[in-house]
Length: 369
Ligand code: KG4
Ligand code: ZN
Image (cartoon, rainbow, N blue to C red; front, side):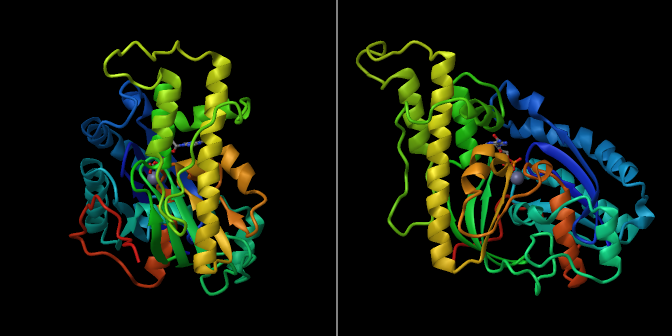
């Protein structure tokens, strides 16, 4: 029963988690920095790095306490070492290397984007399930909870990671075999949510706020574009949609007379309709790209992770998707360390550990193929 301590510091959440056997989450501690970045309506890298330094030790201690274990019970240290903000990554990577070296435990570097896909298998196992696993009986292979790569009936899958920093499609051959097949050419979808929220004068992060407002808005009142790129393209583009919202709200800029097209601020009802129209446009594009990716890869299931996978409109729209579609439990959609600790289980059991000179790397390991 390998017990892995995971560490996450790729962006603006300092997190640590203890996960047993790749999916049984015993603790999931996340220190969010949202309040520090809210007034800038986005993450300020220097502020993020400093906050990680302050948070990392208390978060690690809390994760061990909540899991009721000590360092002696930990079999390996996992850390999200890529992609992310370099100053932020360095704090988690340094903490992980220090622990691995001083405790004499294996170190496992994890790609954060890859871990977002794996988050669909996480859960807090009930006693019955623990008993089943101890008896050697596997979880249902049709469920994403089955981490047995040879038994899981959903591979190959199409993976979609949609977050504040990434919007990318993958062919997922197994939990450890992930190939990039499409990505955004400009903004990530979560970034577009955050920017549209800023245009509408809403708070940060904008995703959950727009999601809530969209539920009571009419998506047909405001007409917004959908960018599909070439007929075959699996890439995304959200900057045109964001600019369309900007022009709709503020008016198309007129360089000669800046006041010529200026509009009054939108009413509450208009904001709800804009939020609904924006969300509908994002969901249409995501659905179309998933269909294309399924046709391209012959996928048997769809796996969705990242902050935007918490979106209720997206979950509702994909509920009727033609293939089994797996979303993470809500608490594992946004950044957390449980997803890295869980995925590390598969590397540990395959004896694929990292050297102690593991680097913090700002970009992902998955290269377009
Ligand atoms: O995965 P995450 O925590 O960090 C990155 O790796 O980027 O994702 C954060 C992003 C933010 O842009 C936030 O606005 C968005 O996820 N988000 C949502 C929702 N909850 C969080 N977007 C749409 N609907 C939501 N319910
Ligand atoms: Zn993330």
